[in-house]
Image (cartoon, rainbow, N blue to C red):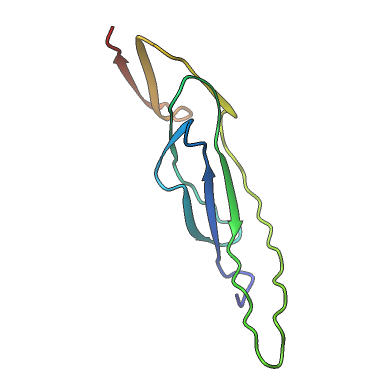
Length: 124
């Protein structure tokens, strides 16, 4: 890194219990971002069992490259890089209801009223 305005490498990890959640997509992704840049990813989570389910944790860390050692200077510990993460979610947990005869799911942006409602009927 030569300038404070250069992009930095990060990675995010979705820590979801595989007994509770099926995660559609990658659980660990490397990306590059600059200061004040906003990045978004859609994550599809499918609950695998009924009951209260805590939402998975998302952890974002900087990928710091180790400094090279030369004969004149020994390796210096790299500085810890902190990053601020805003989690935008509508809840920390969901209740999954078993044995439902019908279900309705809304897909889209509620604020923009561009929601597509999907209905399904279960076999009885």
